[in-house]
Amino acid sequence: MKGVQPKKNLGQHFLRDKGIAARIASSLTGEGYDSVLEIGPGTGVLTAFLLQRNFRDFRVVEIDHESVDYLHNHFPDLKNILTGDFLEMDLDRYFSDRLAVTGNFPYNISTQILFRVLENRNKVAEVTGMLQKEVAERICAGPGSKTYGILSVLIQAYYKAEYLFTVPPEVFSPPPKVKSGVIRLSRLERISPDCNEELLFRVVKACFNQRRKTLRNSVRAAFELTDYEYAELGLRPEQLSVDQFIRLTNWIESKRLLTK
Image (cartoon, rainbow, N blue to C red; front, side, top):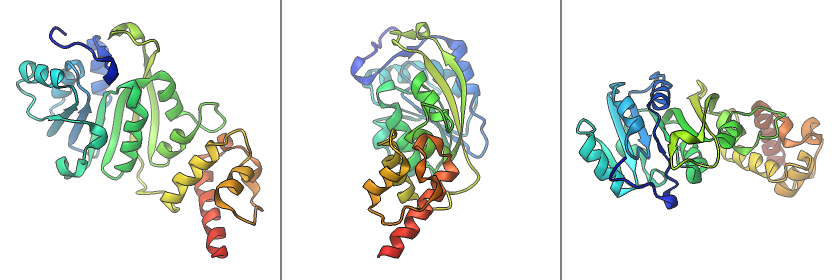
């Protein structure tokens, strides 16, 4: 890693273990897409194994100019190095078809990356990546779990979420203070949930923003309904499955339409 210093403000922890990099690269199924975008390649430890997969269209996006120079000098076969911030990328500009997103995601923006994926859910067919273990577990958690929350429900409304394996701190430079987890998100066959999607996002966020309260209290505060005769309103948000949230969204919309 000579020539590139990890930058704290960018949340950089460079992966040193090639075995783990190989496992992350191999976790991409290659099903339903021919393009792959790696976020934050840094010094290219994961990049090297992704290049071996011979995807038709492989690109990386890196915000750190020092890392960009390093990649140009050490990876002559890497033809598509995009300089910039993934959070501000227009994926339609660079990818005409569906793609996969992968990377050793910076902890400080990993949640933002996933919400950006959700914004582009009809283009992003698959995600594999390394995040803080707590975040990875939260994404894959099911109903009844203390870690089940907004990100769990919204991700799982569109993707099958799998927790693949845990990564210890000592394989990074510098080592983070926490463990990491590698996940895979695979786009569900359904194009969208059978509900008003914009309202679904509002409902999920409203409910979990008051997760200690029952849904009746959350719904009353957020949507100002007069009819609360709905069986599941006596539950707390972590008790509802994704499908139950979809049904709740439809019920709320029907009541709001009646009051207009």
